[in-house]
Length: 278
Image (cartoon, rainbow, N blue to C red; front, side, top):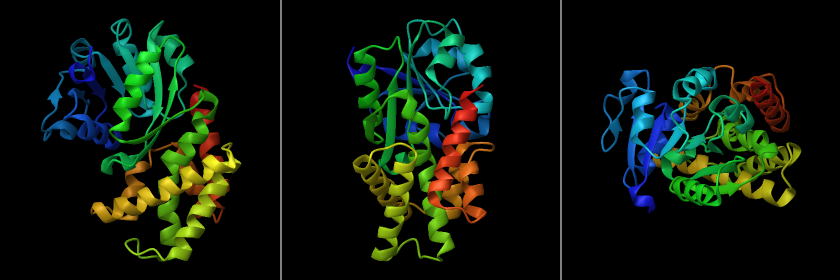
């Protein structure tokens, strides 16, 4: 089946779910469901499902974009209905083995995009679950390439990837705020310092030096572009990225206590590990 005929269902229409839907709705037929109906009331070019079961019945690929605290509820709702579907999870800290335990022998791909998807500059990490096929990986990569750049990694690097890609943009905002920088005009020296800080932190959580520098540069440039292309402020971006009890909240707590970027990303990795020990 060609990509154009693929039907994609997104459960959860928060900041990330809606960013994904907006980027792919012209390429695929997209269905969404969110238990909070206010989030989906003004959607255009996207079809609305009545509930998670209805959504699963209508699509080939299911993207799980709910918060970690709602994750088990959704897994149990769709259990037994996704045997012939591709399931893509974007939940931070929840590994494919855990999802497999509840859903059974299904094709799962774990993905970690970031909010820079809003402007097509997401840094997305992708891991193939045990049962997923090469075709599933190729399809998922094509799908998330519509959001920005996609990297295939091993699952043991996913928590570090979550820290750099998911939490990194919030840390950049904090950096700008703490130095009272005009986020539309970041001086070159400060930008260089920010990339260096984030690069060192990415290395400290497990990326090699070359990749750490590439990732840090993509995140910092993406955040600056986001402020140029949208009306978002650093405070609003931080709010959109930060889930209660999540990895970003853990990182920001460290920064607000005067900790370094490296300590902040390490705290994010630790929190992701705690979330995966469900």
